[in-house]
Image (cartoon, rainbow, N blue to C red; front, side):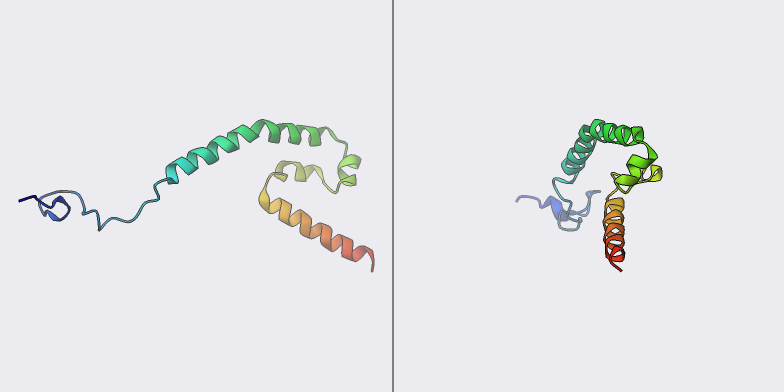
Length: 94
């Protein structure tokens, strides 16, 4: 008679049906995300350095300040920047 290991009270591990489901690719997705971030790092550094080389006047022409340079790759900054540009554009015609 085969023994059902999943429900044996003598075993120290939980039954397979009692465990929370774990995404099978969660670890792989994290590794891919980290690798993607690392691959984009030289490009982000180059963009930051190019912006830092601009004068304050040139930064103002494109709507940035020196304080914005460190945040240019932050997704929240992109949303804030787009919203502020829309508000400034609507106020221009008043």
